[in-house]
Structures are given as structure tokens and as C-alpha cells.
Image (cartoon, rainbow over all chains, first blue to last red; front, side):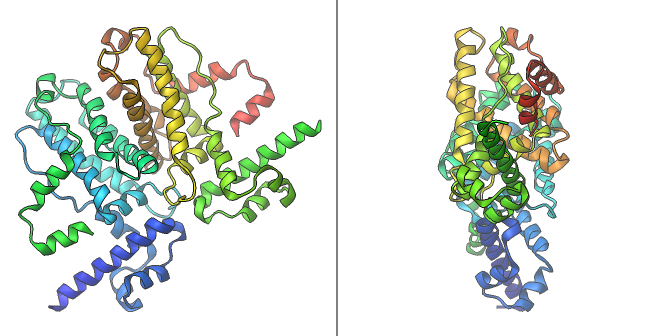
Length: 223
Length: 223
């Protein structure tokens, strides 16, 4: 294995350990020592990649940004639905995505800037909405930034409620339900009639996105 | 002061201290010792009212249930909007309500049943929606339990996003925005046209509800 590959794998192993420890202990109570033990790497290796607990948390937070790109659709509103369905599915299946979302909702992590993921998700969603608007899919009064804020904020709560009530089992259903409640006030009804809102959409999109990936990429995504 | 009054005050002082410590440390890292010091009561007094950290957390979680009752309106959808606006305002102004909401979103509080507040808010919202439905304010396809889940879950996320981005300053605006996005898919448009969605609705409803209260009740609400 080339040196660079090894460095990438070590970094990934540290991030996975950090995700696990942050998820179990919360940001404030987590210690670098425990992350070291969990990762099974040397102190030197850890500090080479991450200088502090804050940097480790930022790495985990950024983990949810490594989005699988949703396949392009003729209907941009379908892309928005697919993005939320895929994110819901990844929350159910990827510890790294889950740890990132939990960190952004960890209100005890005072020295951590948790606004980042919210703002980045909002930006991505604004882009989708702008495209949908250009294609004439949205109602004329829609302000993309306001709708994006509602979509991102409400999804964060829906996932927390699903976690508290069912350990994420009902998240597909709750996500579809959320979209069915918000999109009618944003999207033309003739467009809405063509959108697939089904609860198992996330798994289907994930299968579609990952079928062309290499085994190595698949392993990184599953972490 | 009668013995009973003193007991009620002591219990309230302990709960306020617990709310403060849970908010600062998170559930997992909080200790009874720190709650004791913050409350300035004896160990005996604390254990008389609460047997464990879990009981203290349950007391704080229940704090958000002591809702101020929203004034009755001819339009039940307005009551739903008023309830969310009032809750947003109380999040901005009451440490106890804030601590309760944070505890329900504290994903590290594994031994605590955090589903309670979500389920109780859903129940209250279902009641409002059932009444609105009986009065013919809702679209015929609406299933009150599904809409209640969306309203409660999305509000939880909107408040977390507002906390992360603006320290709750923009919560009134975000709450109104959420309602404007969800209610059109639930409520008859002729009813919708009569609803006041304004961002400062929460403060107005709070003033309306509290004007008839005694000074003592007001002090308890402000905690």
C-alpha cells in the first residue's frame, strides 16, 4: 500500500473512532485519549491529522457533507425529495453521518461552530430550489432561501423525533410525510403529481447511486 | 410562609438549578453534587423531592408541559399557530422551557426516555387538529396524527437551527415561516386567509395570557 493510501486510511480510522466516541459521550465529555484507544493509532498519528478535539469534531461534522450526489432528474423537485430520502437512509445506515448530525444538534458543544452543517445544507437546497424555479416547477411567490431554511430545519427535527421514538426505524415514513406537508405550498400541483414520495425511496436512490462505485468507495460510504 | 409553600419553593429552586446544570453540561456529564451546590439546598431536601438524576431530568422535561393555555379562538387553526408562537417566545425567554427542550434533544441521555415530550406535544396538537377538522377548517384528506407528527418534529428542528445560527433571536420569524409552509397543505384556503402568522405573535399571545395572572404565578412562569 502506498504511503498516501495508508495516511488516508489512518485518517479515516481516526474519524470513525471519533464519530463513535462523540456519539456515545457527546462532544463535551469525549476525550482524545478515548478516541486514541478506540482508533488504535499512536498519539503522533492522531495529532498529525487533527490538532485538537475541535478539529476532530469538525472532521466528523464534515462527514455528512460528503454527500452521495443524487442522480440528475428532469424534475428538480424530485431531486430535492431524493436528497432528503437518501439522507434519511444514510442516517439509518451510516454511523459517520449519524454522528455528524448528532454533533450539529449537540447543544452542549459550546466551543464548536454548529451552524456550519445547517448553512451548508441550506445552500445546497437553495441551489436545487433555484433550478426548480427556473424550470417553472415552483409557485411564483416562493423565496428559495426561506423554503430551504424550513426544509433543512424541519428535517433536523424530524430525524431527532424519529431517533427518540423509534431509533430511526420510522424515518423513511416521517421524511416522506414531511415532504408531503411542505411541498404543496411550494410546488405547482401539476409537478407535484409526478413526484415519487414513497417511504422506501431512500434505499432505492442509494442502490442507484452506489451501483457504479468501486468496492473501496463503497466501504468508505458505509462507514 | 406555610410549610407547604416552602416545600413548593424548594422543589422549584431545585428544578431551576437542575435546568441550569443540564443546559450547561448535558445530561450525561451533569452531577447531583453540582445541582446541589447551584440550588443551595441540603442533600436531604433534594432527595426528598427527587430520588435520582433521572427524576430531576424528568422534572425538567415536564417543565415544558406546564404550558400556558392558549386563549380560545373561533378559528382552531389560529390556536395551533398561537401555540407554536407562544412556545417559540417561551423558548426565547424561559430557561426552564429551554432546558426541557434541550434535554429532549440530548441524544447522549440514553437512560432517559426522551420520547415523552414529543408524544405529549403530538397528543395536544392532535386534539387541536381534531377540533379544527370538526369545524370544517381542514382539507378533507388530513390525518390529524400524521400532521401533528410533522408539526411537532419540524418545530423541534427549527428551534435547534435557530439556536445554532442566531441564539434563538430569529425563532419568531422561523416559526412563522414554518407554519406558512405547512398549513397550506392542511387548511382550507378561505380559513388560511383569516390566520395571523406574524413573527411577533408569540409576544402578543404571552401578554394576553399573563395579564390576568398573580405576581407569584408570573414569577414561576418566568423561571
